[in-house]
Every structure is written in C-alpha cells, then in structure tokens.
Length: 363
Image 1 (cartoon, rainbow, N blue to C red):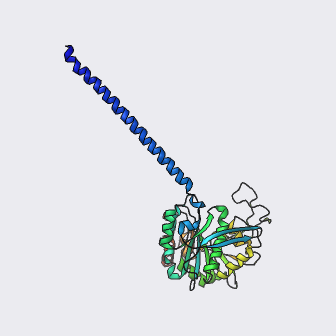
Image 2: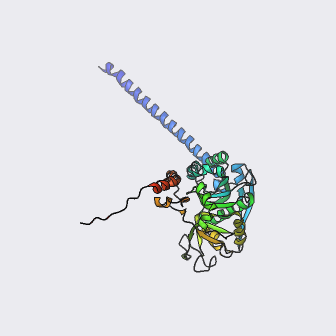
Image 3: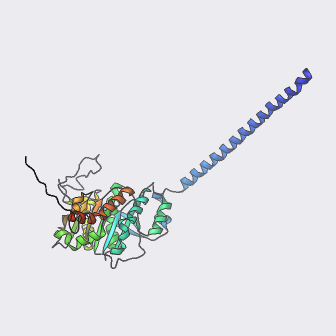
C-alpha cells in the first residue's frame, strides 16, 4: 500500500516544483520586459526633451526653403518675423491677389483641401493668385504641413504663433507679402478660411462698380460694413481695447474682417498710415477702420457679401450673393459652395416662374 502511493507523492512534489520554476521564470520575464519598457520610455523622453516643439523650432529646419525677414513697425511697437518667399517673385497679369487667413492647426488641412476643391479650383482661370497665410502652434503636424506645402505651393508660413492677439500681425504680413511679391495685381482681397467666393460673379460686380457704390473713388474698400460700435473697456473681455490704444468713444466704420476687397494701390497707403498708430489686436477694426479714416478712404457696404442667404436674393442679373461667410467644417463648405453656384440657376427659375395672383372670393 505504501509502495503504491510513493510514486504519486514524488510526482506531486515534482509537479509543485515545476510550477514554482515556471512561476519564477514568468516573474523574471515580466521584470525583464518592464525594465525594457522603462528604458524605452526614458529614451523617448530624452529625445523629446532634446527636440524642441514645432512652434519653437527655426522655420528653416522645417521646410528647407527661403525665408525673407519682415517687420511690423507701428507707433511704439515693432515686431520682426520671417515669412516664406515665393518661387515666382511677381504677379504680372494677375487680376486679384487673394490672401486667405488660416492657421497651422492640424485640423485645418482638411478645411484647406475643401476650399481647393471648391471655389479655389477656378482661381487660375480668372488669373487669381491665392495664398494661405498660417502661423505655428503646438498642435501643428509638421509632416502633414510639409507635404501640403510641397504638393500645392500655396502656403505662406509666418514665423509667429497663431493666436487671436496675433491676427493683426498676420494681417500686416499679408499686406507686406502683397506689396513685396504681388503688387502688380489689380486688386487685393483678404478672406478667412471659412469663406467662399464666387469668382465669376465677383468680376461681374467689379465691372459694374459694385452697383455704382465705388464710382468716383480712387481708393476704396468693399465689404460688409460695420458701424456704430463702441470699444470694450473691460480687461476681462476678449475684445478689450485700452484707452492708450484707442481713446475715442466710437470706432469709425470698418469691415467685418472675414472678407474685404480693395485696389492694390490702397494696400501700400494703409501700410504707411499704420506707422502712426498704436498696435491693436482687433485686426479688422485697425486695418479697415482706424487706418482708413485719416486717409478719407470710404468703407463701402455691399449686400452681396454676407452669411447665409435666402433664395430671393438670387434674383437679378447678376445675382447679388458673391461671398458667403460659412463655417470651419468641410461638409458645410461643399454645401454652401453648391448653393452659391446654383444661385444663378435658381434666379432664372424664379424669373421664369408663373406668378398666380391671389384672389379673394366673396360669399
């Protein structure tokens, strides 16, 4: 009986010993891989610490292209920055230089792609030169941006951080780029990257002096005009403007900054006038209102520049609606572009439609 149980006891001992060995090996294996993982994390952290973030790295390291030095010089304010140089240094035979204010945020790649696929696809046909003006931020994807720059050659990189407070610097950069590389264009137009422009209709309205509103004006701005606005003096407000920057109680008439067009000669006059004024972060007020007032440049309101529109505004030849302020959503860009494209068709349908008179019947 005892002899028959002995092998089982030996087997159990050996089986328990085997389990201990296996557990020990698994423990050492786990500790080994934890050690490797820790070393890998430390190595990545060291590399990340040694590599400065995108928004602090010299632009030449990112693009390997030429940069020109510029400066924004105002009253008591000077900011120096670099900006990419174009391969072609002139804009001979260009009708409009279109400056599109965008950002280096990674989400803006698909937004710019939507704009290229819609209204910007017709720019070359009308000899319109367009550029996206972007800065840098900690959300920028350098790999995507480098690919976009090489593929389209339509991006101007400004060596500055994208922020609302820096929009005035970016607007100034657009003016300076135009004056340095594309002043031969007949007109300068600034838009945001959530705006859609109908180029054929824009030219129709330019030829018609925007319905006669710019007749007799050598320098002018055409846009959605804003007037009757007071400066905000609350320091906690995003649009706070201190007295030393603008001391008057009312802003002069200015353009809603998402879209404005002017003759090319007007741009140089505004840049020169800017040297006599304090810096303001409210870019549209500054560049289209405060600078235009002392030069007696009229800010003209055009009904065809605005947000979404009712179909009735499509009546007329040509229809009024020329510029739509949309959203930073590619799907919306495509939808608004289609609506703007179909405006003329809709107008014709409205014109051909039979109007049934309303008749009141008695009794």
